[in-house]
Length: 395
Image 1 (cartoon, rainbow, N blue to C red):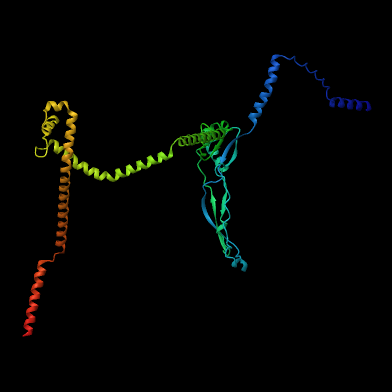
Image 2 (cartoon, rainbow, N blue to C red; image 1 turned 180 degrees about the vertical axis):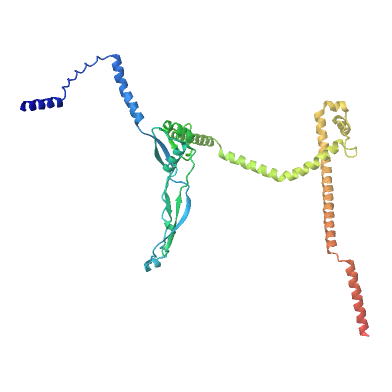
């Protein structure tokens, strides 16, 4: 029995013991460095980087303005405990509630919100629009504390809520192009490096094509100033040198003489004009007038032959200078006689013209001041009746 039991135990122990595992074979030797191995080792980092970039999360950069157009939904009234002011506060006339200063807002820039792009992209345009609306939503509750005065028991504030907007597209700030939402939803990864804005961004300021260099501009102005100073100096020196060569006594004397001549010419111009208006018609009348007062337009040789009773036309044609001198002397003598007569006639005519004008004016005034003859006759009749009544009363 003992031997059988030992054999049974040995049999069970052999059955429970696992079979021996053969040791693994040794690793193969490393391959020799070749062109293919070098190419494979160089492409391995690039492949790992591409895989890492593919697995890295992508974001859409959305610029959200800080201030939105809010619509007041309802007015809230909140009771406040009544504040009892002390006597010092009431005694001060300048003590009153002031409106808090407004905080400066930066509405032009806004903040950038990143929206995660799903690995498989957006399911639809509605999902992208909802994401944009939720990312750009801002809770704005404005409390106007400036309206609160001391002693008021309540104050009001407006709760502004954003209305959901239907986003149809985004503005790309790089080139200010409006990109529809369908294009962004179709390929969102192509807009990873761009900044998209819900509202249209302000236009970029145009820079001048040729920027002005302040240094060169200041040099140009300095050059102009120096050139002006030199020009003024040269003109001053030239004027002084010319003035030094002038005889001022003689120049002043000549200037006084010229001023005197101009003065006399101005004073005598009316008389000279009157003389010319009278003398020219008289000369023409003396030369071309009838035989009683003129020479009927005869030639100078014949006129000289008739004046001197010496020679004929052929003789005076050969002596035209002497003939012209004789004619001018006779003409001057005739002018000395005829000019006073003409002036006297003009004065007489002017006197009668003025007299007729004055008489016409006097007659017009007399007509205006003349009494109506009917009134005169009525007055005379009444006066005669009064005299008759006085005579009858005396009897």
